[in-house]
Length: 312
Ligand code: 3HC
Image 1 (cartoon, rainbow, N blue to C red):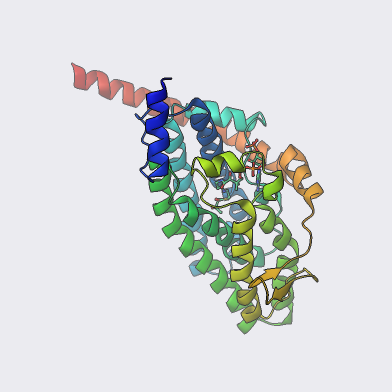
Image 2: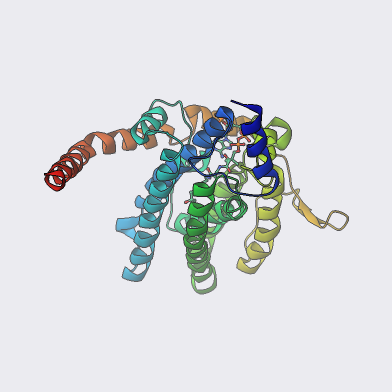
């Protein structure tokens, strides 16, 4: 590395010029991006599992079509993100293997079970809602391919959030007491894990400060979490359901909602592999890898043959 290269890189970051795959970049910047982008890709793929659990039990053809479209979108997001990681030199299968070996993470939220149909709405509203708050900021991330993938992903995530909120609105406004109770039970289980999606407090965020300096992350974990809470409380009021936090209250001085303490012990447990569904999720992904091997092999053989024919 020469000082001139580093200076050029820093200057681009300073002026908000995107870093592109062939540009020189510090090795630590590349590694941090590979870590974040591949974890993000794994989250999209593992995130299909809790919703797939309800696909065959959707209450109508309309609901089934919407859920299926959403799950397929998540697969697409995973693929854009694996491609973005590949532009940094990360080999796709190697990053998938690293996740299956527990060396690379995926979002903690997907280690929670989906117990009722209301969870399909709750995931759309809260989980995709939290993802959007984070990803809107990531559209301005400093690495070009990641930023461009985010633009497209955000458009689809908005549909995901809205279909979830619409599903819940129907349950609480047109449903019976049992259906409303199902929505309340669902937010009781999903509220705190959704707040954990934003990661630890900034004071405990190992990568946060450097990622913000490099403009990989544009906002800190706490600021994003607060944005999400501020938006969501009003939406919960419209649904007439209670957010399970007795300390949640509007703070005139700060202009934000104060919230109660997050259970970081639970977060650490889930992230280190001991959440309610970690084993089930990893078993499902391993099985998919095993059973899908022939498809990959057939695809590669077809591609090799086509290239040979074209060269001949
Ligand atoms: N689940 C699992 N691990 C988490 C986590 C979570 N919710 N939050 C933080 N962590 C991990 C970090 O990855 C890091 O571990 P590592 O050093 O081994 O990678 C550690 O906890 C400390 O956290 P940091 O704050 O230092 O980590 P980051 O600076 O990377 O910030 C992040 C964490 C905010 C999640 C950031 O990585 C990020 O914005 N990632 C991109 C967005 C993303 O991955 N979203 C997944 C959500 S689900 C989704 O998008 C699917 C959609 O369809 C719903």
